[in-house]
Length: 138
Image 1 (cartoon, rainbow, N blue to C red):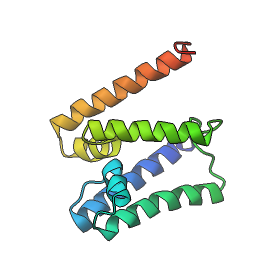
Image 2: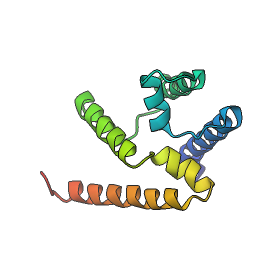
Image 3: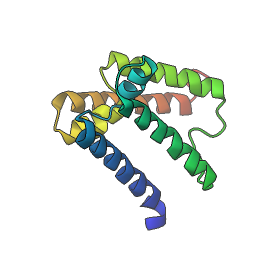
Image 4: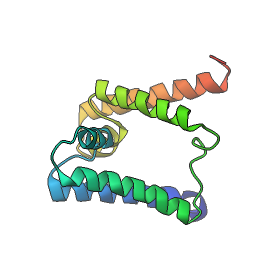
C-alpha cells in the first residue's frame, strides 16, 4: 500500500511544507501562477525567484534520481506542453488564482471562493479528460 501511495503522500507533504514555509517566512500565499507571474514581471521579492528555483530543482532532482515523469507528460511534445502551460496560466489569471493558491492554500483557510474555484477546476478537468478519451475533438 505504501508503495502505491508513498510518492503521492511525500509529494503532498512537500507541497504543504513549501506552502506553509512560504507563508511563515513571507506572509504570502503559495499560488504558483502568481509567484511565477510576479517573477516574470520582475516584481520585487527574492522569495519569488527562490520559490521558482525550488520548483525547477525538484524536477531536476527527480530526473537525476530516476523518478519517472508523470504519465500525463510522457509522449507530449514541448510545443504541446508549452501551449498547455500558457492556456493554464491564462485561465489562472482569469480565475484570480490557480490550483495551488485555491486548492492548497485557499481550502486550508476555509475560503468559500476557493471552494467554488476548485470545484470549477476539477469539473472542467474531468469533462476535458472524458472528451479526449472518448474521441470528441479527434
